[in-house]
Length: 104
Image (cartoon, one colour):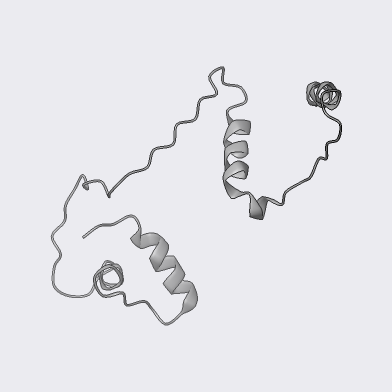
């Protein structure tokens, strides 16, 4: 913290006017995420963070055939193929999150 205060003091001499404003993290999600990653990596010597954007879903390692009848996969399949969600809001949100791990 002392190092940052010294840097601010040094910068103050180079400007006629400056203002420090705290931006709420809700309005600065990307910077907040990067700061959390940086604090996790504080002990590491290399502080390089690589962000990969995947253009499409990766191929699954194990492919299971879809059988007829109802099982735990049925709601996921209905959501992916037909956009059908459970009526319960909590179950619908849970299903959407869970379905992101599967592809058809």
